[in-house]
Length: 196
Image 1 (spheres, one colour):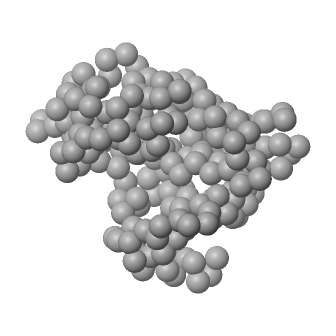
Image 2 (spheres, helix red, strand yellow):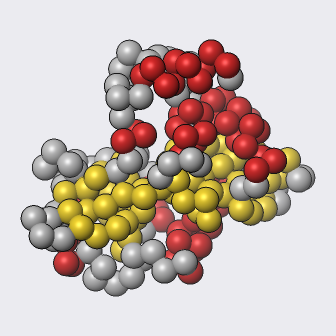
């Protein structure tokens, strides 16, 4: 399968949101908060307007058909006297019939490569600890960084794109966009789903 990764364009927006909804609509999924699920397609929609980085919103195509997507957003690591910008990524989505065929890996590798070329210093995010180390991600505790509440766990991971970029914020806390807070955004998600 020949996978082409390119920058998302406005003409892709609806297709990407549909793919994202399908990708997160798997059987047995535990509902998130009081919103119900999925709500990641709303996140993609809103990230384009808020904290998303459009130069790091990429789609995967097979035979000129969009089948996957990844987006990065603004985040920071903060200490008592310093705040350092970092990237967060997600959601990443692939149409169910194309999953486990290397599409997600192609999107992640392309995103890392592009983020480096654009001069970003580090990526921090929450994800599956059994999957992401293959791309070079490590537990965030390696960098001396905790989540916003001061905790560390295997699903909180990071990668320096510039060597020693996170050294200055050792002991800092990670803050991502409030778009990832399902409780805070409950009403907006409900309204969006009614017209989607």
